[in-house]
Image 1 (cartoon, rainbow, N blue to C red):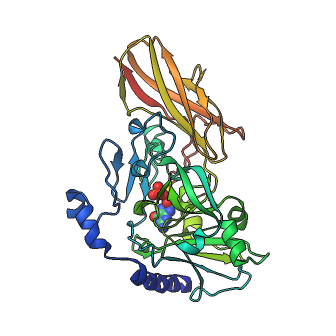
Image 2: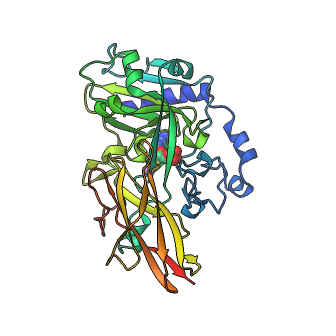
Image 3: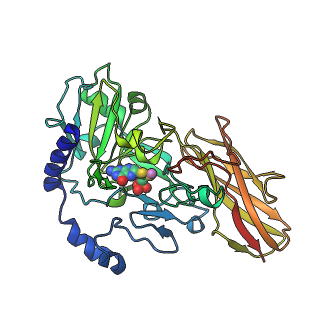
Length: 393
Ligand SMILES: Nc1nc2c(c(=O)[nH]1)N[C@H]1C(S)=C(S)[C@@H](COP(=O)(O)O)O[C@H]1N2
Ligand SMILES: [Mo]
């Protein structure tokens, strides 16, 4: 309770300082349909040939992915908003740091503040990650396994590969000074409180262990050589490479560093399976094809796709067109840093007819995509081999 109240007043303060006349600008820029329906949750355009628009969320269409391009442009990247994209003024923005895990402990209402300028004076890093929502693939719990799960009905487009530019969290924590007993870090966003089922859960926030903070966590202000788009966290977001998307808090308002274990509904109520907070993403694969694609019958059909894993590089990808009775190796091109791997496969002399294309990846740690994903009510971590329908005509 206390935390929520404090968080709210802190955020209200910040908002009056940093959030500019977003509503007006938003209405002027948004497509007419969405503007009429009220202020849009997502500010960037969502062309129907590139996105499936779920309102506060939007999924990338795999058939719109350019096979020659490794990174996902921000304009094409999926969006997952619990509420709506806020408009934040980078010139008055600052990141608040507090908690008893700092060498000089700070209270939430008297935090240390670092401006973007302060952060940009520290060593800069760029890291490519596969950025993905925990619920990616959720719709297949219903359509492929007959057990619908609640939540956005993503196919496989809640994912992208992004080169994030920023400063390592460990360098920031070293800079401000860390208590050796620090154990847990909680990141909180500056977007509106999340209200669902009549309950206000407060600001969107999620804790993570100090080990991840000191390993590869990044505070990012750039993506693919450009400033973050508002929808993707401008002016600053957290990136936890390889971890569930929800851990990468956008519009980062504060970091609490604690010597005790922190929790939030986002790691106790949601984004858990059997009570265990989800961390590293599983292995998944997608074809760069429309759902139900019509392929022209030829001697050789060149097909492409991508596979990825939270654990890092993909070791191999196998393909089946006979329901998994026989598998053939795809040609895999190794990914960058922690990013996905592109692959291609030549389909020789297919007969006309209906098929399901299967792609199954294995990562460096030996994890392979199963035929079935055990059901969980919120539909997280669907990593089973997806049966992609196509017709050869
Ligand atoms: N502040 C804030 N951070 C957030 C969210 C949010 O709604 N608010 N959504 C999370 C979830 S569930 C995902 S999958 C990713 C999505 O990031 P993107 O919209 O930039 O693709 O952001 C995460 N960080
Ligand atoms: Mo997510």
